[in-house]
Image 1: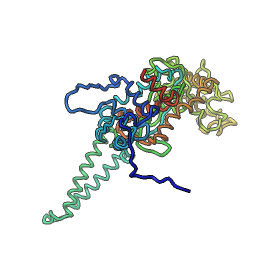
Image 2: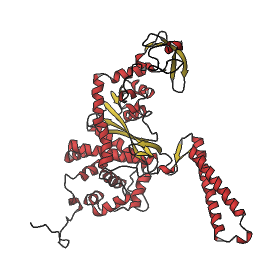
Image 3: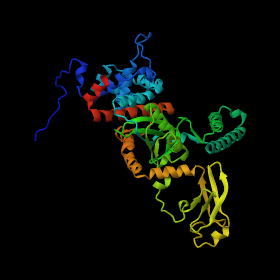
Image 4: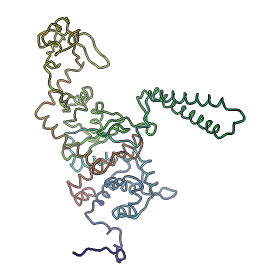
Length: 475
């Protein structure tokens, strides 16, 4: 069987015009049309062609390069620099402009806030194109590594231990130095000890500065590489990272809003993220849905109070714990007498309130009733008798539970996974994003804005096709 053999000496004739480098249905043309359709003044970038001084690169061209590069896994400035030399679609997109990696990195660094607004404008364009309805919104969070190592994460305990070791070493160096004769001042060993002593003093100053920052700001930990990242736990272990929040619309699964927070869990994020999405939509949706990680009654009430149906399961709905015969829900609450009635008919009266946990405590009046009960050791093992905690807003929590268990709500919740998990899957698997490149929350937010826009562009191309999307963007 014959083989096809390549010939590097073969004469070829490229098109005379860069415009002919890519076809009319090439995806790069959709990205070009999208950026041209953006209102850069709303993004916060002023385009002034009459600006005096050395000519710079057009911000539109630089944004096109970043957005298109992120869509195909070219995230680092050096990879983007190589692409504008060797990749025809990048050459066409940039009109043969060839910014170096420093210029590309500087554009992203100086325009973090502006890049963050790109996804907002993308969502507004999708609303105008009737691709986002904003009636049902799905919320989800995912952990993404920061551009910092977990070894640079400092806690108060670590600072105190480090100071103890440094002080011990400084004391040892001073003690050893005293034993050295004055005539041996210039020996290499003495010089080395002096250098080490100075290094230890510098390190001690840095650790004391970190400890002071922890005390003043009330933080549990701080990372010396990226001070805004947090210690997060993911499927790949514990690392320094951010908690990425995403709001997805039901109609086509397009991203309405993304955010990056420094909290390791989602329990305090529901209301804030939904409100920001509603601000972009310029209206309130009818349904807001999330998983059990957002189970925080106070947060859910903030959205439920806006006449938005909240569909969020409680932790017990997703736990594998078997339903016990003497769980709290097996005890009847008497609102008139403000007490609980156990399955055996005994009364648990109100005792105290826990302002930290925002709960009330109920305990059986006569502990001997529990001790003599046939279910003792099953219901409780305490010699003081059975105790129950009831949240101050227990009525709201129960109402939200019943709301989640409605058949209509279950159908919406089942749809949640299809819609809200897809963007994270595309970003982490297809685009190979396992960590942010930029440091700080503003940098991470800017990157998430680009990544969210990349996903929306891929979905819009799938829904409308490249010619159809270009036509709508340019009309």
